[in-house]
Image 1: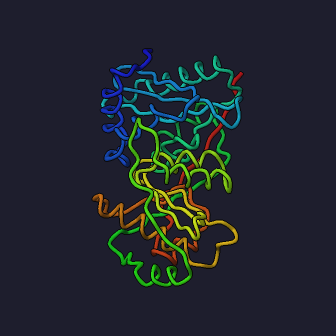
Image 2: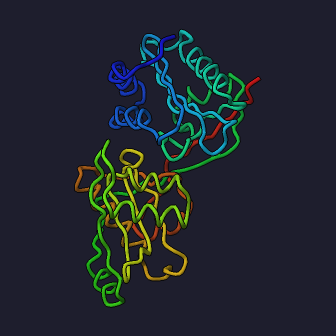
Image 3: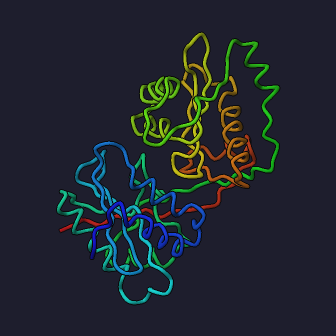
Length: 292
């Protein structure tokens, strides 16, 4: 078992592209994102020929560790490599102080909420290793070929003194600009620091403000290619900000070449269904196992 260093991450990305057939187009970006987590997060990548696993410690609960990504090339399967990689990840997590390991997203920097049920072999492996399924999460899919216009809404909001803006692009490895910092501070105040990190690191970030006060935000690309998170301050709800911010982000994703967008780890199904005709589609099982 070898520890993957910076020089070997490209090879790990190639393994992920070959193995993660449902996510091949963004597999390399996922490896890259997981290798650039929030400051202070402890993580590792371990490899065997044809396989790689990435794991990290939770920032929310120091006793919980996460198996963030597991990939074995199709031609290398059936030889116990996936099992060996999981066991190696567990050993690393145990050494870092974890009392429990999870196949579950480690916000704010994660690949999936859990194991996509269509990766059946991965779910079978987890269960054969003694992991219990403890929760279900889901994504919605938005077709980006639908009408995403917001001109009438923007005019209505302008009459109410509300402006909707883009915070500008994020630049990996460089400090965020003033708008992003201001929006992230708003997000941290009303929600949590995990969402604030996503706002700072998202590919696209849009926000609404009135009299210099941020009222709501929406982001995409914090988790590569996915939409989210988004939120509106309690006293600004009812203005229709969420629909406008959502559509602006999705239009930006369409301009970036996407035909559809995943709305990740969804709560309010009805809102997204009504706003853009999104459909619940991708389901994830979350697993956990106590480490002896």
